[in-house]
Length: 428
Length: 164
Image 1 (tube, rainbow over the protein chains, first blue to last red):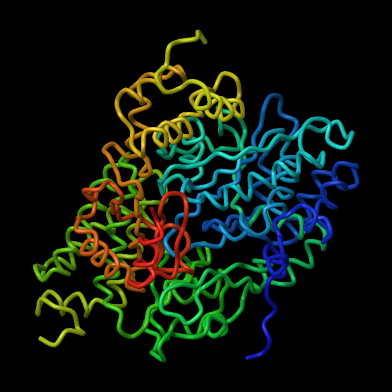
Image 2: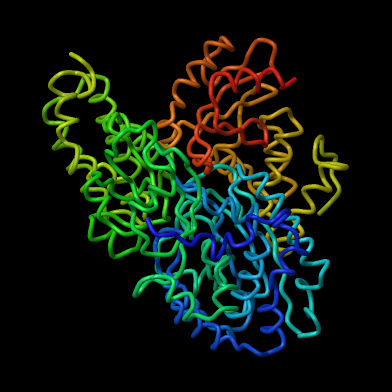
């Protein structure tokens, strides 16, 4: 395996002592871009063009081109506008943003400042999930340091530009990672997604034009502007630039976050994570977080970690949350746990999702507990198919994709449970 | 807002909630409902009551029902007593793959209580939670505001002994 360059963007300072301090950040080029922006050396249009050149796609899971998203905002529209950062990291298998908040919070802050300037927003909120107390304290302290350094607040560095930045803490709800649920949550309500359109760019927080970007996306922005959009684009593959943080968990020797270049072969990423643990063989991989389709080992071993290659293998890059399963994994039990998660986290607003996630869990549960019926497999396929595309947000699809893909590749394990009342690994 | 005789939202608690209120537009006090509920829950030993929720509603100028909706939607709010140390065990996929279920069973056995119950001395309660977003250290638990990763039965023993 050739040497793989690591930590070139969001994690570039993580190896340094007290990397979260403003002194360390500024000693390493931090806030230089922000100062150029305030000095008028980079116009909003130039920034959008550079971000488009970088080919960065949203790192929260949907993969929407960031430059295009920003261009939907009219920065000269009268009245308040908002920039929101989505640090509600809750997709099972995902833990990359936590380490940005803990180890490089200033780069995220600089990204939010720049994004706010581009879209004409004088206020930003970073929505951090409520369980992330330590990351919240790190981020909050970094915000205080940025205020003290005169980089936030009113008439920043005499530029005439105002920007205030705050944190909103969640309280335990996966759905608040959906951008309109996140907005509802900041407004002090249950996190139930809104019907779209209107999209947040026209009707967002408090009914005002709003842009929401993921933590990793925003933390990448200062580097894109410091080194150029082309630099970032060239790190990746055609159509998807940059580095990407892959959070590798499950049955590996060295689970953890690996910031590598987009398009890195999966097998190299697996090797970086120490390979499958206990000397066992790879059975299956969920490449992008629990909402993306599971892939059998042979397909995963051939793919590269970029949008197109993973799509060709039959799944999605998602948030880059790679869950590794070894040859002893009971796929029925794994799916049972995932169906429980979506059942638990459905906000209850749309009937197909509210009812369907419960159906799917109960069917997989009865199969796993030896009470499955021959018709259950068809029933599962039917229910998952009837949720998809019939609800107002992505959670319904996210709940259905695991069911459909586990059955596509591992149906025989479900049939074994139904016929024998136990897993393929149990001696009957 | 008139000064009322609140039971809990006064002094330091009021100051903490007011700091959150101040970060939202002046006409959007309800945006502080989540931090307000978190703070009063903390003051009350880890769980909410009808009286506390009503006080938050009154203070923020919200209908009580809107506060109950929030307080029952988000999983970190509790509505009955919990242990002094609420042990939130993640059992989602990445933790499950690294034997989190065994740790839940071990905790139940060790503490003599089921998930959702409090030990008779009031020190501990067990809760199963969804992904905590720290899967690189699976299996993971959150106790109070802290995360503890790479858990084993032995590590849990040490951890529980170290908590008062």
